[in-house]
Image 1 (spheres, rainbow, N blue to C red):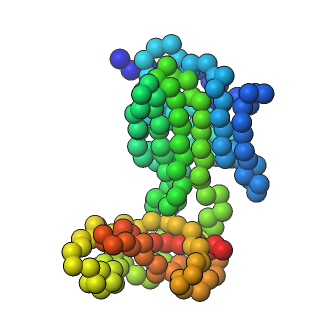
Image 2: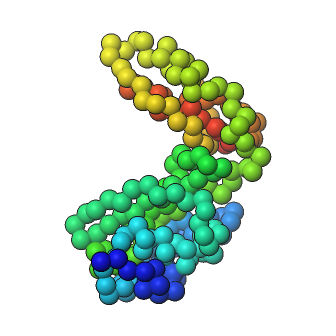
Length: 201
């Protein structure tokens, strides 16, 4: 049996003396929230993904998001022993954003006890997916060349994503903030994506 969102009530997460909370220093948005003193959100049956989204909507101001959560797309629901972990990922102009999981953890009795927010607040609006320099076909060709050193390999279908560039040793020089670049995510097993990138350290 399904229940309507109204059955969850109108309260989002609460900040109590028992809560452990961290905040984003730039936006003031909650980054992590943990509280085992919470009560069940409902006394009836519930759908974990629906409850998680409802709690985020009711708490949207605390996370510096629009109430409708237009930039959060469903990802996965993991089921454990008497618990659920509901995961969303950030959407930017129709593209998934790398390392942007928003995770809502709850018990099977509907007590939502922790939220982890990896949303990227600093993606510049000027970043435009239409300005990519390398299309999927070209990206696949480049990665195929790199993989020829392995006796066996396979490539998945390339997907355009948004991710934040961080310079590390043996990587190309730092790119100007918000410049679109032709970086690829690759691994021994093949191409994972062609990427749209915004600047980072």
